Image (tube, rainbow, N blue to C red; front, top):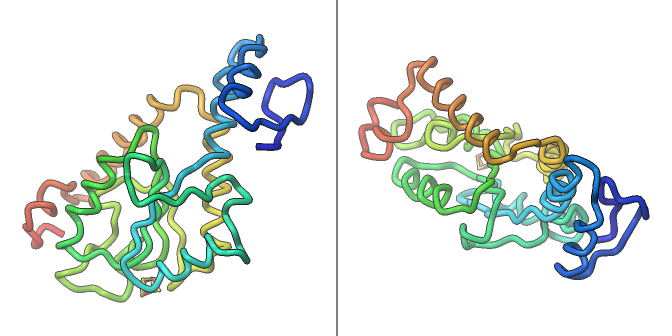
Length: 208
Ligand code: SF4
């Protein structure tokens, strides 16, 4: 990393190893500066978990390739193991049979974790207004950022990621705020008369 961490009197530094990061953190004396430092490191090291099921996944590939290149924002470590990831990017149509898989992968991801819904299909079911397609992934997992489009341009997803980075930088108690976010999601589902994951995941599609 070659950025200016918050509270660092020396200004811009290069951090090449964990030891260097720990040494730098030990010098931070201001109240709350350790948390800011951790948030700074976290926002510059998001590890995406792509859940690509259809055409939007091709645009996701554009996002990680040379022209757009999300490694410029510290998010180049795309992993297909949920335990190593903290940012799920859902790109494509999610059919009801796939819903439990999506939920399981979300559950297996490390905390704190975030979700970007990429494209109309994952946002709302898109053009597939049919019994077999989930009408929005937020019926089964909480979504932080929705990117509209069919498909959205890779730059639009990068914009969502930059907004997420701003949000991470401002967090004060990240685990608690993630918990509140999930509680608000469940309240929102209930207020809209929708049933959270249990019915969907057990195949009772009439409840969608
Ligand atoms: S939103 Fe459009 S481009 Fe994306 S998966 Fe659906 S149909 Fe394909």
